[in-house]
Image (cartoon, rainbow, N blue to C red; front, side, top):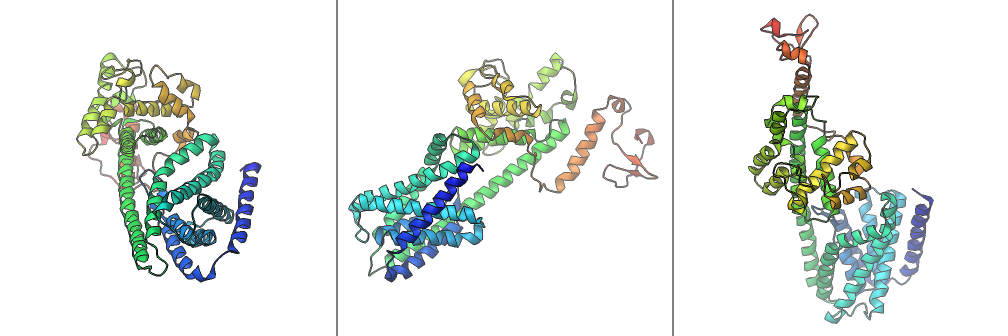
Length: 468
């Protein structure tokens, strides 16, 4: 962390704490029980946040901050923000500095929003339909200040331009702004000082809805993660069988997903591209293994055979429910921008965008796996690859780390180990022409007894098939 970033963080903390002390002097004690009750609900919503499939997080906690701001005023809203931070400590286990920074910037945001509400003509405690635009303005101001402060941290840590980071955060925050605005307006309109039953019923309803959404999205995300891990496991076994660099498909999948996310594609399109990238080499399992184990150039016949794998893989994936679009991307991922690819020889934008993204991710992994440079990758723009996609890839700061990552999670399923060991043993045999001539089918070691590679005793029916 740079010195300037540390200074920024400490400045925000100092400002936030100073503002907290100043505004608390205006706190109305008679409203404190209500504020504390609302703060507890808001804190629980912050704990049980909803994670969306695109990685965005919606907690709904700030909804109650704006409700209290419109009903009681700025000091009470600051108390809500402070309670949200305090209640969330046990779950997120924030470090002290990080906690202080988050709390301080939230305080700064709500004070800015509160004064924006007052400046636009809003008066706490007298909310009507005419005040709706004022509240929407205050909520927008809150998020703009929040994004402005957080963009400094994110752009500095990710080594990206500040303005690009700011614009991206604004785009990502639009959905959250709309949800929070809708709920805030509805709850404020339902509040009456001397008859709060309707308000508490709707508050309870909002809380239950968020819990239900959290459960539903968590279930969906976990199922998708399981789906992806199953695909990664399948491709890992395929790579071991065909002597392909370990983890290639997994890396291509992650790189392709980052490219698609950078291009702001719809979520279902991002998923389709990710699935296709994971399975783009699946068709190779139907080809003769000697094609992939051959060290020299392929013959014309072998090249024709090799080129079939894209269509074979596409036809295999097409049979899986929900992967029709992924099948199309697999079919065309070897097409080139200049029309020299296969299987159809199409060019330019006639190639599906998903296929162009996978082609770029595939080439990127190959180049960096062989420890070449970004210049080698950039040289493919306009020939093999879409120039626009190449430009996007080169602009993603953390993409170069992907080829060095492990192919599969550290907690790989134990049942895959046996298959991996067997596959590795077979690979060693197949790669030796000498062993192939003798018809060897299994490597064993002899220490008085015959054992396989895992150390288990094995029965040898034909001694001439054994290489000791």
